[in-house]
Image (cartoon, rainbow over all chains, first blue to last red; front, top):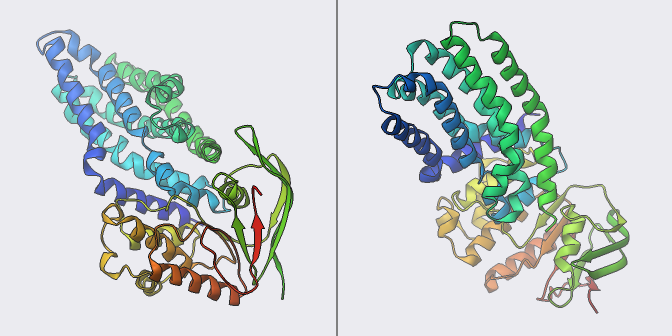
Length: 223
Length: 195
């Protein structure tokens, strides 16, 4: 039952490890972009602690988008995708395994690095826990939604800009609830509502996105 | 015994405004080998993709009850993984527990022993093709759809493909093969496209 999930997960993790530089790109982007903010805004300013949660979230979102672009491209080009689609079983678990592998090397490291990044850009200490928490809940949603865009653009060669236009509107709720939760905590309020919304988004996208991705991948074979 | 593996009726397909086949019908039973002949662009690959369910025809009914194996132009090998890892993944996709010995012997029979752990991007075109052929060795699918399996293969490997198809056939499998190299089997049937 879970066979296909594990098979895809192991394979994609192995590929990610072999393609070290490519895998490290979004993480390096996350760190570099945040450090530029420190230079641009200045560490002694009052502004930096205030904008920190928003900045971390926006940069995490761009890092996620940067990494999803090639999610299915290689498999499409080398014909592995054909073999996946041939299989008469539903694509659901295989796609989910693939996305989990992808998230483990893109969203997860970003969430793990975020406390460090938060300290680096002078964010208040009390928001670190909520920042990590919301990133852990939010980045899988970004990966799942990005997966839909990546699957739709898989046959188009470099669909970078198209992908951005497709998934950006769907990323916005995640961004609003994610950074919203951090600001609630910063203002001394409770962040239950936005966190619950993030959980809703996560549950919804885990159940629905793989179907959409499967359908889009089948469509990508038509040309 | 002569059980039908695939039945196609009234298949019509248009690509880029050009009618490739019109109300095409074919049947392949166990033990059959059907060769697809035809000039480039006559729709051999498209037909195979239709049969594999990768491409939707305009009209027509395709019925197949058994699992199928498709080998297209693209090898289906990740260039960062070795032939062995690719083969293990492919067998795993069908949720089959293939023993490591079986996988190794498949790699051995396509002559890639020395390259079994080398990433596929270091292989030559012919070796890539051989690595893809290893899928035939571990296949349990009864219907094979092969798209020009002889491309970039040397004489030994061509003989190997012939041998694999012959074995598959005698085990009750069927095969549809687009080819420019005549397979020269006894009693193969030929479908000529674009004639």
